[in-house]
Image (tube, one colour):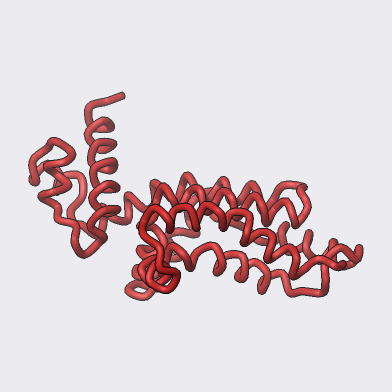
Length: 202
């Protein structure tokens, strides 16, 4: 690996850790530079601003998640399997990158064009196959009549909110960090079962 690539890798790793522990607002470029083992001038050479660095960290993580989710949406598995695999993989991923949901929401409110940048990424999730699979299973009598877009947004909402609203979820359920993590782990099956039971013909 070239020295420049190694340095950039060190920066992104350091930035991910700092953003994860301090959030976008609390993170400082000096702290990221220190953690990466470089000076601040070198950090600014690679990334002119904290926002650009945050976007790079996000895109790096998104590039790992998006193709994985896209594969689930576009393979030939049943809708039940898609829901179980999506819920499991999304939750596992977000437990490793808990800063991402808040970043996405904050960035979209601040800069609505940001989603256009994301859509340029190879592997940005495509819902067409998912939607046609939902319609096919409705026609076969496997699923109740349901709008596929509504179903996908329901899947997203139930998976995203516990990360997006973590402090509220912990306060309402009176869970400490350890109990919260166990609670999130259990949602891999809880959410999938809840959605599947609501849409399958019995």
